[in-house]
Length: 176
Image (cartoon, rainbow, N blue to C red; front, top):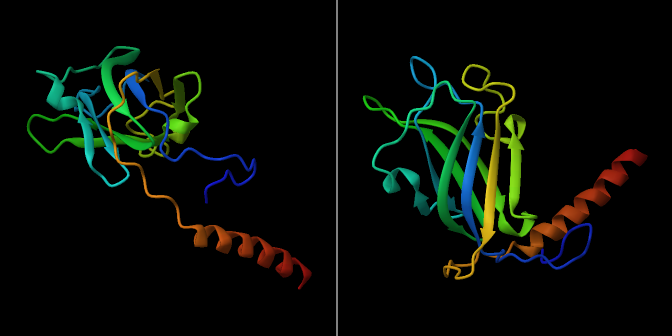
């Protein structure tokens, strides 16, 4: 499918090159024994390749416990579809996966995105680690010197045709 399904506008699968410059987590998740967490994150592409690992860029992962929010200042180039996964660093055991989300740079407007708990994989149904007011905010800036990331593969046009047929089949079922 090379068009928006409803608006019939061309879709830019390559995405707009952006830089993640600031991530704010409002309400600190509780993954450590005494509460709080030691957050770091990874950015991966659609094929699962790690584009950025925050833990590799800091000397020490900071512990947050009683703060109202966590601010992470970074410079992460992104383009097209990407996944952000947050982990809680643990000194004596395996790091805990806290939550994740997918974004596509073609849908980011005014270089800002916010997601509440309900729209964050891993946090949406978790009542023991996340406050009901949990949310993520991400600020971006345009990338003046974009990295040459491989474009995502175009979707299979045959799948789009099947979807249209399914819609027609649904109408036929109503007549039965």
